[in-house]
Amino acid sequence: MTKDSATRHHRRLLLTAGIAGGLTALAGAGVASAGPREHIDRQGFGKPGEERRNRAAVLRAFARQNAGGDIYEILHDEVEWTIVNGRTYTSKAEFLTQGSAPILDRLASALVMTIQDMWIDGDIVIIRFEGDATAIDGVDYHNEYCWIWQMRGGRVVRCHAFLDMIAVRELVDRIELT
Image 1 (spheres, rainbow, N blue to C red):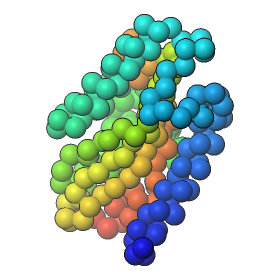
Image 2 (image 1 turned 45 degrees about the vertical axis):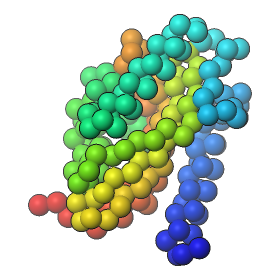
Image 3 (image 1 turned 45 degrees about the horizontal axis):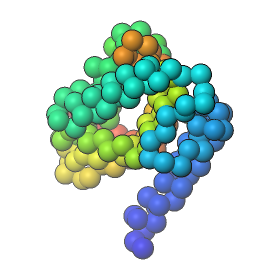
């Protein structure tokens, strides 16, 4: 195992442990411990129709992103987006300019988002995914994310985002924007 792969593996373990703890706290032990790739909680308070609609909206947003579009179209204009161990943004415009732009502006290619797991319970959708792109300096960018979305009317109204902030910091420090 190379030093880079060992570092990535170590960060992945730390991120997974943090996500597991956060999921347990935010979503309840039953949803957090789901084994399958996708879990719809039929014993919770969620309505099956609402869960199907939320699942479809999330999958459309990820497909749009991976086709070169914008996943953030799913955000409500007044979304509350919290980067765990970071800060909270109180609108879509604020998050896009101050939260996501520092990453996306440094990428030469679209961020390909590959869903690893998804859990759904009523209006809550938890998506664990990997994001991969090429930075403008030609170096690969890889990050692991877990977003906990609260949905309303097919839009995200609240998010708790877990991600590897070391990977973000390395990208931002390496590429200075002019």
